[in-house]
Every structure is written in C-alpha cells, then in structure tokens.
Image (cartoon, rainbow over all chains, first blue to last red; front, side, top):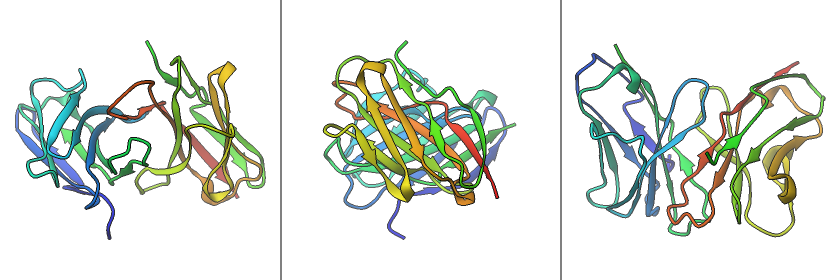
Length: 114
Length: 115
C-alpha cells in the first residue's frame, strides 16, 4: 500500500499522560499536514511541513503540542499532559510540492483521553 | 470569521433520487475549492476540485459541482444516487494567498441512501 499511513490507529490514555502519533506520507510528497477532527466537525488544520521545515502552526496548537519531521519523511505529533479536550481524530495528509496538488489523507489516529 | 458552511448536516435519500449538497464560503478573492468524501470506515478521499476555468467540475463516481462566484457557493450534485454513496461529504477551501495551501473544511454532511 503506497498511501499515507498513521500509527497507532487508536490510542486510549489517561489525562496527564503524553502521547505520540506517527505519520508516514507518500514517499515523494514534500508537504505534510496535520489536522484534528472532532465529532460532528470537519477537519481543522493544526500544522504544516515543507520537507523537514515546520512552516505554519495553527493557534489551535497549544504549547502542549509539538510536531516534527526530522528527515523530511515521516512525522510525529506529540501531545504532552493530555486533557479530555484533546480527544479527537488526528489526521495526517501529504501532497506534492505544488500547492495545487491533491492532499492525500491517512486513516487517522483516534485519541481518547479518560 | 472567514469560514466554510455546509448547511445540511444530515440528508436521507432513496436510491435514484437526485442529490444537491450546499457549500458556501466567506473568503474574498481567488479560492480553490474541493469536495472530499469519507465512506464508512475509510479515510478522506478527493471527489473533485476547482481551481479555475469551467465552473462546472466533474469528479469521480458521477459527482459534479458548480462554482458560482457571485453566490460564494460550490454545491455538489449527483443526478441519481446509489446506496454506495452513503458517506460523509466535506466541502473545503484553500484560502486566497495562503502559501501553505492548507484546507479549511466545512462541518460535513452525512448522506444516507436507502435502498
């Protein structure tokens, strides 16, 4: 399968714990996006990478959130000191360099904070 | 605030009925417009997109959308739906002059097609 993959698919954690999600984009894609989707809403933009550079972060991304893409390939999204409000589906998408190219989405990681 | 609006949150149709899902956006200037679909248990997939040119855009699986600039709308249509079209549909916009090309999504419309 050459699509975008995300791991884990599901994560249940207790409030206050740290969690880390991984996204593997389509191999030749330079752009990588993280979105968050809560129940009944569309995905909301969190952050964006061009190769290894994180070029934009949403105001939704509090100080507890950090994302990396160390070698311009896979990316990780870490949430520290999780809160119940962090419960959501975290989606990763990738695209080619041109902004006009389609963003391909992964299956998402569903986070439940107890 | 600038946004994307999908006014129909839930739509129920019988097979062979015609479909039109509304999408309005509030950005001025040149926008790029998309419809994504999420079938049950699957990831988001692109149905169609509009960047420029013919405002009537044809996508996969018989879907089409019409861009009406004066109405800030990009409604999705299908003449005859099938049970397999049961899914959630999201309208999305790349805001003008946005170098990240991030997508701004509407809240989605859940479509249930009854056989």
